[in-house]
Length: 353
Ligand SMILES: Nc1nc2c(ncn2[C@@H]2O[C@H](COP(=O)(O)OP(=O)(O)OP(=O)(O)O)[C@@H](O)[C@H]2O)c(=O)[nH]1
Ligand SMILES: [Mg+2]
Image (cartoon, rainbow, N blue to C red; front, side, top):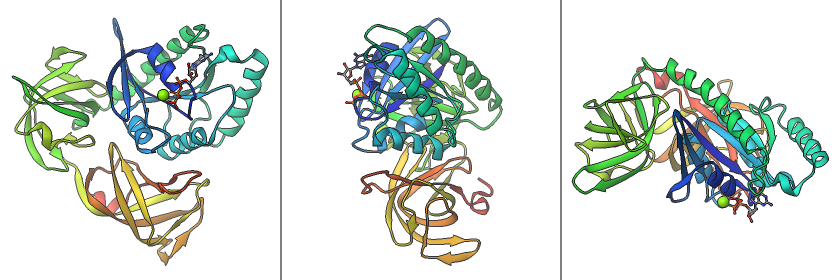
């Protein structure tokens, strides 16, 4: 059971690969694909609205346990570069570099390109990812790719198991009303285990509710562990009150005014006080204003690429998060590279959360 984000630049073969790995399901600015065979369950997320907007990419990455980064024979474009920056800022550990459209290349070019990618990724969290060539036309490399996904799936499953005793958390990505059932949400258990009849809260709307029933891949279950993709019928909340990004949990921090410990990307133009940016955290996003920046306790008006600093942001609306969530600051107007910095909630603010 693994959720996979298939990402890459424009025309990199993402959708073709997703369609060969699973069956097409829900479609919006992201497109979901499903694959079930015996024990193996894959959920594939194609950020179809990327690179036009960075949001589908952030959504897909927040929904996924692992990444397939697609690079076609012509090489990496600006958007593929931006994907690498996002992977690195989010510290994503599990993934595979997929050389797509291998039938349009040759062994020599594939090897040359693979060497190039390795050199390019050597200082990022993708440094140890396998590079694999596939074709969705000739099916070359497809079986090997599925096997590699299975191997990573086993590692991720073991990691999810380690969170089994922690308080449960569900990230909601879809919500709707079903006649005769009521409010239904789709999402992923990212921590702990949920049970039928659990009484929890939806954040940031702070609505207490009960899990009436749980489905995993259309089968009713009594509980669902971390890593599961679930459909939940909820009691105590209306579907129209629930949006993508809402979190079912026992406790979250909710705020529109926070301080982050930030790493400013080496590939960004830096960061300055007063600028209007966009923040992404889990599946939520909102416009933000940078109200102050401090470096080693000293207030500054701007910081350069590669800096570490404390950034105070005021968010347009209240968001829900916890100390483990990574916030990404993004400049939607930067034509070259939109991801500026990654940050964690300043320790003292998260206390008690
Ligand atoms: N020959 C060959 N063509 C492919 C392969 N995979 C994809 N293509 C073609 O490449 C083009 C782009 O593929 P898509 O799967 O749409 O790529 P994408 O990354 O989803 O593209 P956008 O969503 O438009 O950015 C299409 O015309 C595909 O038919 C392949 O393995 N071999
Ligand atoms: Mg596509």
